[in-house]
Amino acid sequence: MALQLRPLRREHETDARRAHAELASDAFDFLLGWDQSQPWADYLRKLDGCRHGLDLSTSWVASTFLGAFVGAELVGRISIRHELNDFLTNFGGHIGYCVRPAYRRRGYASEILRQGLVIVRAEGVDRVLVTCDDDNAASARVIERNGGVLEDVRAHPEGPARRRYWIDS
Image (cartoon, rainbow, N blue to C red; front, side):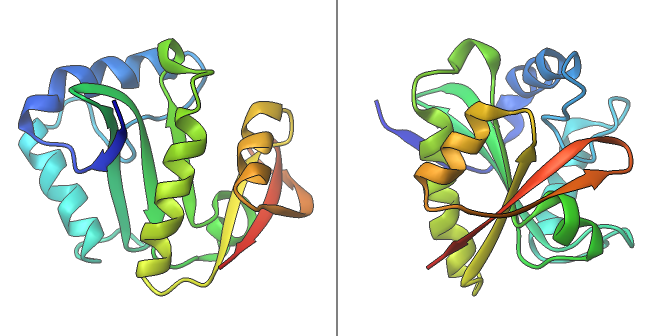
């Protein structure tokens, strides 16, 4: 069954919370900007507002957050930033994605990034920045398979160094 990127809905709450917990041990947020005490419906409204650039905190930019589904299974997610601020230029890039541990090594990361590139380009971004931790060889391979050209590796003030790749249309 083909992988599809689509917005999270009310019925995805349990799986999304589970995915968030699975990745917490890796210090990775599956659900960006989510407060566990927040009602799920409020979080979904927040994601919709981010997509439209509404009610953003000073450190956020307009972005599209989508779940990656194979059938009804939530296998991963992607965050597509419509523009870059200083932090994203240095460490985060236009696209951030992940695959839940149980679904890795099946080609889902490559497909998530491939589809995400189509979406970010539809937002008017011609040169796409994608980053990964310097020690994440699997993610580096995914980015390179999708046309990423390494520009540099930058020290991160709060974590591992980040590899910065550019992908042109």
